[in-house]
Image (tube, rainbow over all chains, first blue to last red; front, side, top):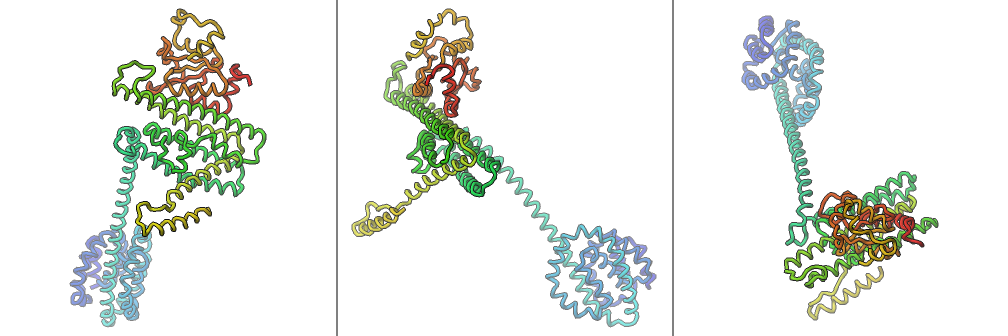
Length: 483
Length: 132
């Protein structure tokens, strides 16, 4: 019997080992109980085995060659071989089955517990399958040989057992069924998780592409927004102004972070080289703001010059769309002590020259105002008479366009003032200077928000409530007076 | 503007119109620029030019001002100035342009930068426009 089955076994193609196995079952009498109890079951599983067998062609061949050496081929061991092949291709958890076989009688109570733990095992083994799948395939072939040596010994043992009594077999059948079922479940789980992983990766790739696309669109829209800034006149905020507001908000956030960094660096007593780098970065950051303002001036000068982008308290100090450089120098002078004689002279000169430049620009702007007023009022001093309305408007438009030149020059003045401060002062003094500037503007902004949120008497309230409200207002005002 | 007439009278008799005809615009500009310590090319209606004039007056400097809109060769001079400054777009105004001691300082932004970084005053002193 063994010979017949072995010959059929060795003759047949490894790919159709499943069929050979099935045929072997039919051929051999000791496998009768299979026909009775397990044939139908094995018929169902056959397809599963086919699948596995096809994928493990190499290992099967190794298996068949090694098995062919041992003449004791039984359907039972062959099935064991097949499942061994499939099982050893997988990581250790499923290989636990092997030691159980020679000790069938002992293992039966364990099987019960194993079945309950099946569900957890499945997930574990499937996840392990996923990770170890590829690595295992290389080690599988090597493992196979050793495993099959083991298995063949077990088979010899089993053969002896089977020859003597049939009771161990009946104990083995439900175990085998469960084992095979568990293996099938493992395979399914492994396959599912592989598919899930593939789907996830595809999703990631597609969203990466989408993100790149969106970034590109945003860049394009932003650049177009700058050009189209002048077009929408009906809107209260043109796109240029809106964009500037967004960029300014971002600049403020960045500024806050840099101030904190500078503060930390200053008090950590870093070497001058490192501090200088941070201070230079801060100066560059201020330059970036002037760049932003320059492009905003080209698209919407009134947004800058009316100070809509600043807070109320800052707005009351506004000069030509920003801070007044000479005022800033005057404020900073007492904060920068101690200064050398040379530095003091330099800063006083800076204050004077910035004041003169401011004066010049202010007078230029005054002239622009005057000229514009004259144009609007009717006849102009220099030009010809008979001016139509549209002609007047055209003239006025031309004059208005000079406004952006003034704002740009004013920003230029501010930038030059900051750069000159940076040149005159030492690194540590410059750090303190930038911190002082930041803190000063922070306080102005804080003042603005406090002012906006201050409690006020509600006008138009009826008699009954008026008294209460005024009391409440007074109470909170006294609270504020302690500030 | 009376500056040009006053300065011309003090320095030397004004160059005859006939001789300037043969000159190229750039050469004219350079010649005009070297005639005084401080020369400003301006347009009478330009507010920025007014600002730069006020700046010099505030410092006690009396520049020679050439109003291009009142000069018959104004257009050419303006084009020559644009080329000297390296301006590309025709839309932006060229003036005011400042020359000190015959050398080009530049437009308003350069003048202000020079003043802030403290290089304008020595330049003026060197050209003899400032004595204090």
